[in-house]
Length: 488
Image: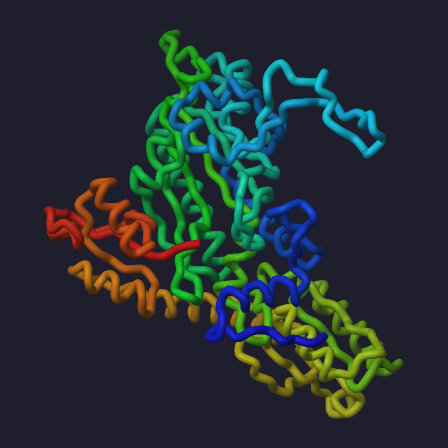
């Protein structure tokens, strides 16, 4: 497998494309701005999905599924929501095809026009809240804690595989509550789940924060987020949790009888992460030799390579080792391809990001040793074959922690505090990263800074300390700093 990966320093954007394509994660499809997720990429998404699903269920949530199609009238009921998504919607107007009279193929049957157009879901708040109206009658029906794994469509004119495509996979939680306080706790609970998953499983450090009014989800009262920093100094919004207040309940007339038998509108949240996490994983850890995967997310954690090729003695040792590793929950495979030389296999497994590679040859077995190569640091060592399974377990944990520590150190080096607009622009145009600066709190200033620098306010950190200062652009009073960054 030829690498031919563009270096990050030479062209970061092309480097990312090379990793995605040469590691067989995804490909462009015949449908413009849509992607095909290949088995290697989907296996990563499956591991992300499986762990998040466990975490959602541990916090009391259950899965359900709602229609892909949404009546157009539903989007008109919540004014901010329709305004936020109107330009991204795919609209279905007809329900049938027919043969063209001239025999040239099929055409849309003009007699098959829908009475009401259907929207291919860009997000499911409207169809779900119309359903909740029939499910919720009393406080005994609350809280309603539902998640769905689905695909959504948001029309895009530019494609970046995993990061920005017209159709993508995600999960979207939609919950209903009897009180404002309970709904607000829900948004924080999910924000913590997302942050814990990102840091402990993806080894990707994140900053928890609140979005500005301008960056808030359409129809939300408050939007919370986790923001990560990629190796090129750009930020990535890795997950969002929205407090919706009573906006959708009022739009769809979802009420409940409280304990005093009085009618109230329910309180709502929604939250989601998508396949862009796979893109974030690539850009957080990978290098110029290919993909680098944290062991907890890697589809294959250990690969055993026979040297120089498979044989009865090596096969027997490999099978025994695989049995020991699998018994400890390790995802391991044995590369039995006898048409490729070991060096080629090493490069191939390195490109695919497999965390640990074990090399076994006849001489190794005679000496009771095995060669261990770790993907994150490229270090190699000879280890005793006796007890190697326990060594590998500890090594996988060490690699997981090292990737997190390395990424966190990079982020720490790329959070810069500035007090002037010139310094803000200099950092953004130079080393990049998060820039901590005062902002006067107005959308006008926020948009002007974006226009001048191409950077947005990524979030107001939830653990922000109040600090009197002056806005970097207008000089108006400010009580706290916010984080600016260029972003995906």
